[in-house]
Image (cartoon, rainbow, N blue to C red):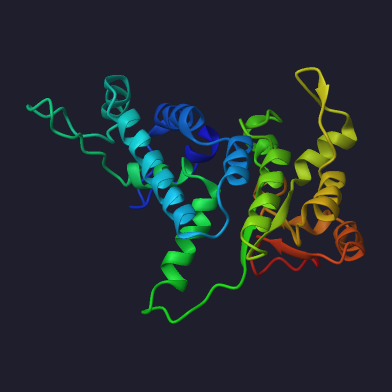
Length: 266
């Protein structure tokens, strides 16, 4: 997460305030965000479609937001934020809430939420909002594998497999209204084929895992994000049939970020 945040901009278009703030964000996120396994357990113990269940998840959403604000208000966090210019100087009143500039609180708040809550937010925004006049029949979650490009192969707190297994459970609980595009990382596949180790252990095949996730976890497509392995353009050296053959054999859709002027057939 630190690697990703340090290379993005906030909601006001200003650069994030350096790697120190990004490291703090990751520390807070990994400390309070629900893991994929803990959320699966919560889903299995929560009633599926009752009003009571909906209220339970709303409370969970508010609880996570409050946890984040408490973490950001800790003196150590405020010192880091002020040193990087994303928090105001301390108020005279010890009870005054610190101000977090640049959309920091709003940006981080989504990182610490339950995944299922995000789906309920969509329902509240569209299905239960007369002004939109829309109904969501299917929401697609596009998972991205950042491990190799940002962390040299080291996994996140919730492994990709655990994340896909959670999305499988969310698909079931939502009665098929949420499905997933499996993450495919070209760089991970290259590392696997080259036998490149991480902490003395070989990585796994991204391609083989995608096949398993499609066959066993209900994924209906594949998410390829070229900057997380290959260049966003100039992929002409990659044989087109490398992609076409595998995805067509599995009868999958392919979601690929690339500029319009890239002429490669994916």
